[in-house]
Image (cartoon, rainbow, N blue to C red; front, side, top):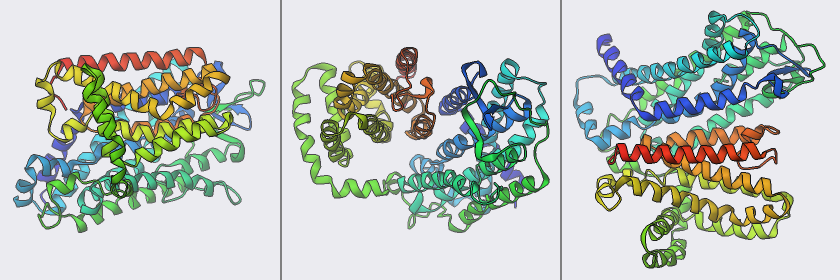
Length: 520
């Protein structure tokens, strides 16, 4: 194997990815989410609690807690950021050049994989630098970089290898190049979280070799210093009357470290399988149109429900009669419903349930509607780019900036169509929770449009949205994370904060589209 070729292609791959705006946007979002998870103990919340007592913010505690939280997010976001390179080669015409080149499959795929690993390592390094800054502000002991390096390597190392390997495999095998691969990996990610249920069973927790996120290893490590059944990692409450606990600087045992090394070796298996299944852009295996195809179960459902698209035709007729941007927004909403007919029965069901359900069930209905809407909204701002219509949109009246505001408004209107009745009923019994729902919806619509237009891919927002939704549902009692009022923990400052976040995201998107009018 030509090592010079592999090294050159790997560095080129990493540099290409690092130059994308989606890299910066994802990193900023990851840092913001994790910073919120590292709570100030003065608020009554802490990163790690054991038997009701908080664990001091030493280097070992901050490294364990932050690595555990970030590993879950990087495992999801990292895959979606690495995905799609083969499809880009097909769309740009480079596939034929690569397929006809003398480079072997193993060298080409190894270079792609190494480039993806380097890219994720760069993101993790930037994230760790942010946590080191957090240590200087909130830490309760000396800053020990080697402790952070050891913990991040053991917790996040196998996760990086696994995410890069899966992204390569799913791009190398034609049946997984579309939405089917995206859905399958999300199921795999959820199954990694489900492994935690098995960790708590038996005499005590143990590190699991197939747990690539490292959560089982973190729990097994903490179990040596307290009751694992009463240990919480993340946003944890604690009893201020109990004396804080202090973890030793070096917490990892040889056994747990060995299990993580085994996990790293197992994480290479999808990469090796990719070398066996690689299509090498052969026309009889994969075509440019197939790279864009949507073959997920949702796509099949949309195909079966295609006749329901006729129900959206009156919206097109009304949009033609409405003047200016109002008609354009309504046309975008109608086009979204026609493109995804499964949204039509979901929308009708949301209205019926919003009227029929007991008021106590409305927050659960609202979060389900927001989850479905977020998947639709993630692709609304990238639709023009996917159809190669960016240039046409940039030369019409108002240009790219007007198109941006139209897409933001369409995303918001579509969200209101799903949640307005529930918000109206909530406003009667709990106005603050209704306000949280509307403010959170606006912020999410603005972020979806900004990230979609700036990065050119729906996956940037989708990965962050799915993880943020998971965090929001799990973190009860934290106002800043109760984005749409699911738990009822939102306060007036948190509602205003999310509304302000939406305004800032909307203005940032406007400035970006004015600066780069033809960007997709």
